[in-house]
Length: 355
Ligand code: CMP
Image (cartoon, rainbow, N blue to C red; front, side, top):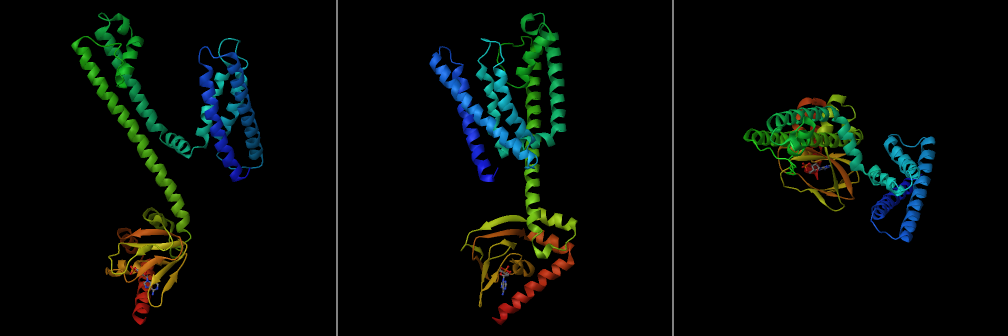
């Protein structure tokens, strides 16, 4: 399937899922006229046919050696077709067969990059998450046990057994507090306060692990992207992998529209730029054009003086930006690289002076 077609099919599939889920919800309304019931049932059937065709196309793509990593998407496609059919096998009158179409809730998620990112983060952080879950379980059990010991005689309904006290422990630990079970004894109330505070701590831990996981994953994606870009800059071609990794971490991609000023003569300079795509013009006499693979902005960094010239984007330009602090680290580490940059700066200064 071409990229465009698969995009259109993804959008249509999400739109139909929203439509299908709305119908599933409407079908649960009591007193819906039978004619509506039948009509909505036909709409669900039409959506099912679309998904069946989409599944056929996915399977064909897969057999033809389509992109890897589509396993979870295929599982969603298969379930979206199989489960509604299984709904037909439910005993008559037990449940509306359309209810199993609720699996279509996974259809829009399947194409969401953010959802895939979340799955990857949860996968990467599973050990830490399971650790916090275990901590949650231990606190939950201890809270239920102590509440049972303290409150069982006074409130047998809510605290008469550890499983009963568990409900109170869950609502307290998650700081939900429905208020249907409340410890009466002072010791029980102190326990409740402690459990609430533990709950806040446990959820803060969860949030912290997930936030760090997200940041780490995004950084990794950026790293891969910048690595590919850096590989195209001739100046870095002969750098050992260790140094290349350092510079990839330091470089930040930036885009500049045609006509924009990237650096201005006379201003202090704290960045240098590597051109990946497009062209820039150095406003000098005569003007100089630089293109992919060239760099500029090094003179101010090498000399510590203000910018020697204004540089304007002659076309939309894609750059990698190196901050002065990383530039210093880089030239301290690699003398050949430092010499090459200094040599270029010197040559440019001479040509400026000659002009
Ligand atoms: P800098 O002075 O930091 O900022 C302007 C940049 O334009 C400068 O560094 C050089 O990288 C670049 N530049 C200045 N003069 C020339 C030139 N004659 N040829 C190519 N690049 C130049």
